[in-house]
Length: 406
Image (cartoon, rainbow, N blue to C red):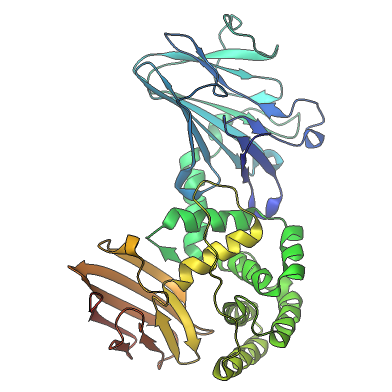
């Protein structure tokens, strides 16, 4: 299969792939039948349109979430297909097809194992060679038809009662923003976090064995998005011991900070404070590993669990970096040229074992007005030496003008 994107549920309990044409593929063993592909075709005023052959085809992850949108052009506009999964019926693929063109069209889909509340036309598709189980459905201007593809033969009916694409997108966005909310390059962050939620426990365990730092960060990120922390206490404790033996590993500093935070969420305050103290000690000794300098992934491309961890870490580290128990550095790599002149915000970014920072930047010519708020015990000092060496923020909240152009 050509390059494809993942859709699914939290924890990889159900998953499918959407190829570059918007065709959905699932493991046939879970369906008890040979047919594992859900395709779609469109008949407009001019001809039949096969998404696999359309030069007008465009595809994206909606707002970075595992809702895959595929568009093809027809006379007068686009026909838009969205594929995603809901938890109903043990993990159900939902396909929505919307007619955003000026005239009515006909859509064709294979109906074996498919449920819909729409009525198929009595005639079979003509003028195109399609699988035998394909049926056609009239689709008026500005209307939508929905189909559900469940692993169980007995699951069916009530398709319109299932969550729609917009509702599913909102759910994934809410999960991502529960960890932190960043307005700049937001879709990149959402896509990476969604990939972490889609990962199976086996994928996370494998990463933890190969790379203690990024394994801890994967667990911590899932916990930040609402997954339980308690089941991972022993894994985190073991990974921390490995990190302290090799404190110069990439992302070791962030991993220890996030380990302390995750242990606190797991109601292990003593273990959390021990990890925080160990982190502070190795920071003072100057032996902790620096942040990874590898590039983040592009929005819309498929990434593995390790790359997703790196993407999240890079995104937050570029805004706030824990420097010590009492200090955090803002914009540790400077303010990227692509951010200049763009107002942006970030909320709830970790700044240490006990602190998070929220900030907003508003541009005034070459300089940036910074507003910040610290959540956590008093005494955290903020600096931004790569942007304005004169800036020091010692209050829980405040504002300052950063002399970026100086």
